[in-house]
Image (cartoon, rainbow, N blue to C red; front, side, top):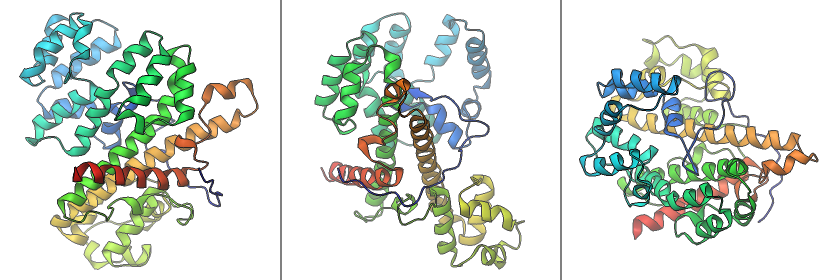
Length: 371
């Protein structure tokens, strides 16, 4: 793989309030739905409130805080949120039937989350949501092997799986094969989870291309940092897109735009967005978008904002783990963080990884949609 000399270093902003949190992974190679809700400003409590189930959330929260097993009543209330066709399987699984987890269609964290969201919006799953579930289900047997300590068999299964083999490269497979315990897998799980999330974004991108009959023109690629974006993060690139869509050249011109006269626009805030040092709140940005472009165009602004937010999260986490690994270079602890500090698939910089792998996944999903 060709190495690209890194002339610029993209500065990603912390997408969450406060200090960096521990990795929140679900299954083997996906970030937990909690991450998506936090990024979208839609915490778990809000989802339960929308379902008119806030009391259920409070009971689950209390059970977790006190480390109390779910009561039969609590289990039943949670299961009733799921589609009727899988409720019996979930009841059996909670009762200790391990074989249920191997059945096709059994619910995982992401499946449960999407079913709940689908019940709120009365729409079928989008392609990128189904792709997330496909990844989750493809790892069920692998996770079982890892929990049994058979990492060699787990690596072989991943290498031969028609879906998961696209996420693994030789170094990653070797690390999995040679692992001695599940904890050893955390660095490589994080690396694969980043690539998996990038593939989900590309799936969403292609889904939009199909909807507009414009296959071949990416919606989100302009938000990816590159050697040519001169340190601009996805947030800064999103703001650049916003300026161009508004038809203005500078932050000052945007702040003085007559379309925003009814809003209190702070030029300092706009400057922070432009530099990518501060993530805008969607509620505020929505008001700006409606004033600038009208309600019809605001859906596009929201998609671009959401894509920029997730790309920033991906870059932030990759940079955080890579920098920590670099600090341990030459020490005995460095091997424990492999494959870091290299990016997924051995790339030497975040920018080259973003560019190469996003293009790979765009082409991959275009073939899937054509088939």
